[in-house]
Length: 416
Ligand code: GLU
Image (cartoon, protein in one colour):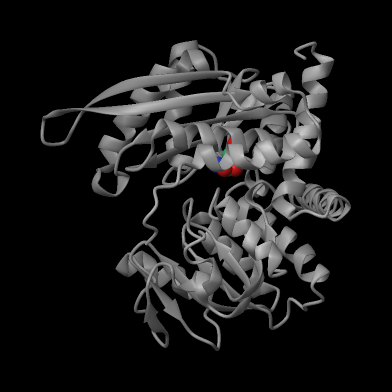
């Protein structure tokens, strides 16, 4: 465990400052980019199953809307706090710009422990949150989606509450809905699919064949599982996985679907038949071709970065590697495909969902997949080329691409 407390917003500012210096931005422009546009904090009283009333803290942050309505998920986690939501909202701003979709960035969160709440309590909490932030969201204003511990069911409850308040059925107000109420084909696995597409490009730069490539994954939620599944289908070997309770290691590779089945039964991948038991962080330090952090922020830090033995760090989670750790990986020639590029597949298919909702015309799974592949591959190339040009790591490269696009929009609108 890291001993220093890392503030994710400060981490974001460090990379932003370096980017602003490289782009020679004036101080006024940097000032705008380093502050969220608006922040909403709400108190959410919920009647719990035992009859008591509990008040939860909720947040929604609009970070920057120069390029379009703001977009970003909603996280349910005991560690949610305003600095984290602000960082996640800033990252959404850079993420939507890296993949060049017409959005700004936002994020929401509720400080709660969903693993200790019943289905009814979660529904009540979600409906309270939806009504509390209804004035802050909208099809052309701010469009939420899932994040850690939220899913299509959460989106459906939010949507239903919003529709009641507005008196109009506006499916484009939230994305990653179930298919039956305007969701898009391919959204459920889009983050993992995008991680896979950018991973393939990263492997090419290192001349490694995906067939037989060794992949190690921290986190076995939506992003972790689907990343594992797509790499496995392409012939890679999933040699290590973990979740918040522990890990599993098997040098011969494990089947992602069997792992998921096992986790559904036992609530963890630890103890998977034929594997060695490890801890939550072990996959980060396993010798492999690609390590995929797919859990939370600040996992690879200056205190443990020397233990990373992968050739590529493919960030499915948001903010898993600190700025100092990124620099030391860069110096060791370990390629970091940053979060705002690697995990942008989720928001990209959210964008497709929003477009389909607006036109009321729905695409096939193949159409979605082909469009996603094009966008992710192009974004990887833009970032890789920029990082080569400036002789910087790919995280700085991604910020360079993103910030340039955001600043261009701010200029066009007369903000600077
Ligand atoms: N929560 C996801 C992310 O961090 C998806 C956001 C979205 O689809 O709007 O990118």
